[in-house]
Each structure stands twice: as C-alpha cells, then as structure tokens.
Length: 389
Image (cartoon, rainbow, N blue to C red; front, side, top):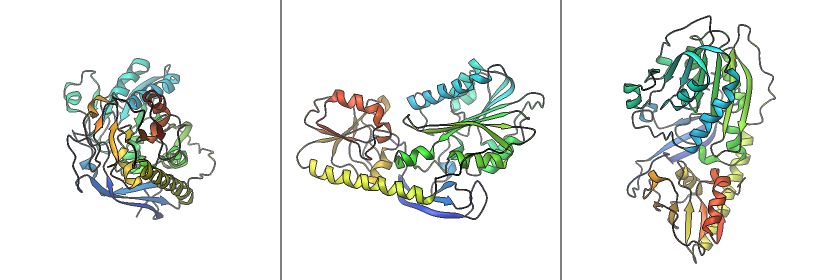
C-alpha cells in the first residue's frame, strides 16, 4: 500500500477498527445492526511519518447532496472567524482570485469577500448545496465537483491568488494529484492557506474518537509541510490550536519563484508515540467502565453532549450506552434523536439531576461543558478519557 504523501511503499499497520460506526448520523428511532458500521484501518508511513486511513466507505458515498454539514455550528463559525482574522495581514494585497477548496455553503468565501480584495471569488466542492449552486446569491464562480477535475478560469500571471481550504485536505484521497493540479493553475507569490484537524492535539489530548471514516489523512505540521514542499510550496507560518473543541492545524504556504525549504524540527509523532497514548486512552476508558458498572447499580446515569463523534467514543468504550437514561444536549436539531446502535435518546437537559451521575459523552468539549454541568448540579461528573482542560 502506497503512502499518499511521499508515494513510497512504506506503510505499517497501526490500528484496525472493524465495524467502526459512521459519524454524524441522527435517527428518529433506535436502529441496531450493521447498516451504519464499516471497517477502517490506520497506517503510518515509515518513510515520511504520515498517518493515513483506509476505509470501507467509498468517497462517492460520503460527498453528495445529503452530506451532513452544519454551518451554524459554533466550531465552524469560530474557524471562519479565526481564518479571516489571520488573513487580515493580506488586506493590502490585490489578489486575482480567492479560491475556496471545499467551500460547502460558501460561508468562508462570504466572510473573506468583506475583508480582502480580489477580482474573482471561486468556490469548489462536490457537496455544494444545490440551492446555493443554482441560485448563487453572491455571484461567486462555483464548481460542484472535486478540485482535480476543475480547470480554474481567469488565470493572471501578474497577480497572486489566495487558495483557502478549511477542513478539506484530510478528505482528499490523492493529495499529490489534487495539489499538483491546483498549484499549476496559480501564479507565483500565491498563498495557500490550509486548515486541517491537528493530529498532534488528537494524540496528546486523547481524542481518538476523532478518528472517523471521512478522514483519510491525519496531519502533523511535519507531514503537511512534506506534502507542500513536494510541490515547491514554502511554509511561511503555522499554528496548532489545542484549546477549541475540534483542534486544528493552520498553515500558510507560498508559491515562490525560488523555493525555500522549511527548517522544522524532526517529528515525534511516530507509530510508537501513537501507541503509547492510545494505550493510555484505552486504559482510561477501562477504568471509567469499571466505575460506571458500580455506580449504575444504585443510581441513574445520564450522558451529556450529543456530538457528531459520540458513536466513536461508545465504540472505544465497547458499550451501547444502555446504562444511560438519556444523552442530554441543548441542540435543537438533535432533540429526540438516536444514534445508530446506541440505546439512549437525545433529549433536553430538563429536570433535577442532583441524585444522578453525568458521563461526558463529548469529552473533546469538556472545557466548554463543565460550567453547564455545574449548573445542572449532578452528584458527580465523569470524563471518560480523564482530561478536562
């Protein structure tokens, strides 16, 4: 099996996850069975250090008109604001094109249009919502397709382009093909602004429930830079956000007439490093299960936080959460829904919980949930992976 970054036949098996749940699925009734599970395997490249996944799920089964994307999510809104604030440094540059790869509902493109100057604003996404693609209220140039299939219009060698991509590169199967196709269509002095989930933070915060079928690549700054340097794109700056719910890696690369190689320190994120933290994660969950088995004999236990990856947590805990009375969550569109193969219904947190225990079922969001949980006055609060801040 070939590494999708360095193209070497150097992949080593790291983790095999049979019958792994699909994420971001909310149902009107309890459904059990194998309809919503597929196998996924994680590998590490011994040559360049990249981690990549092989899923049973086909890419065309994921990115279509029914793709689950919630632009009103606080995480997405915060990332849009973060990217926009980072790019204010470019407000005095006249760009030829601002190209959003993976634009979805064009919310990032809309925001950048208010702060940056460009002749053309282009959005590319195979899951572009039909109402936006057809009606195009902002008069963007839109392509409902994959970037490697697009010949971008309005090239101008005299002006730089700005390519932005938020949470998209981790989904692209053939990264080199896509990046080569894109890089060859922009002028020198163009900037590539890339935001992807941080593998650094995933490991060190024990957020292994962020392993999902949609993510084929798990980037550290070293492996992201390796990819871009293969295409003669120079790392200008980067940032790893550890504090938000969905931790991300933000990088800015530039296409220069004279390529400059970065001076990053060697990566510590090896297969051994991953296994050390994954074993710690599994041990934490084992102790949590032992605690819950005692508590559930005498009192009610509620889950709190119906996230898009709660099913992944349940998988690693080896449970269907049948001991939970409900999973409590304030989000409107999740009310009275169920996850596939998990027994508790998602409901609003109404009632007296002073004699009940809370299991945080969105541990990646613990620092944001803790004040809300204090208000509900649970008898005790359990965070399954042992990390709050």
